[in-house]
Image (tube, rainbow, N blue to C red; front, side, top):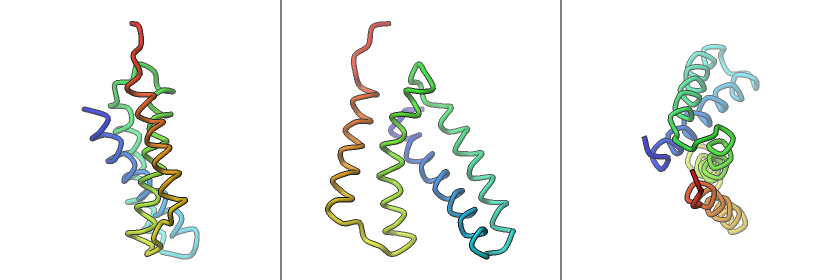
Amino acid sequence: MPAAIVYPLAALAEIAGCFAIWAWWRGASGLWLLPGLASLALFGWLLAQVEAGFAGRAFAAYGGVYIAASLLWMWGAEGQRPDLWDLAGAGLCLIGATVILAAPRAG
């Protein structure tokens, strides 16, 4: 599966899983843990689908996508709109992720 598809799906799965644990830790029902753990397992499986040659490279590039997705989550799920600095930082991270994945490499 192409990274452009996998990374956003992985980010959604990771953020949803972490949010479920975050909510439980702050007093929500323990039932939040079931979909949260399933979501985190899905995240791990999705990230393993990326063809990057090395896990570290796949994880590093994913980090940029995760940052941008986290800001979208903050806006959509928590109602806090990202400011200009948030958007600039996320843009830099996405540029970095693109450089990592698209760099010409021998072999």
